[in-house]
Figure 1 (cartoon, rainbow, N blue to C red):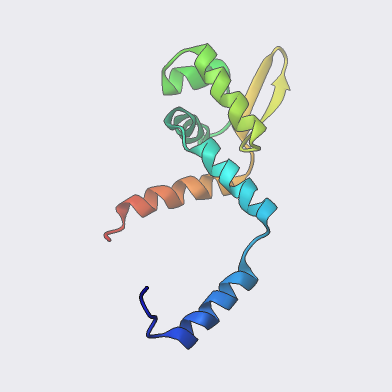
Figure 2 (cartoon, one colour):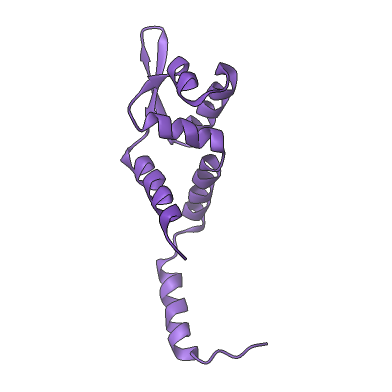
Length: 116
């Protein structure tokens, strides 16, 4: 087993990390959100919705695929609280749940540009 040469410093950092750690429930909810975001088809839908609300027909047009598959992905995103719906006559219109979704997408794209 390796010995830490910065025991006191790292012990303080570990204590600080424990104090700042979200609850188990919050960690689980964040993990579920990232799981919902982890499917490329769902990400394409979210990128399409960055420009504003759309009905399923136009989401299918924007992302490709078929209506059934897109509807399935939209149900998953809605269940995760990432998109919301509203009725417009006989149509259901989808939009991003809030600006945080856009921020997560933009941060992920910016991260791809970082040189490690």
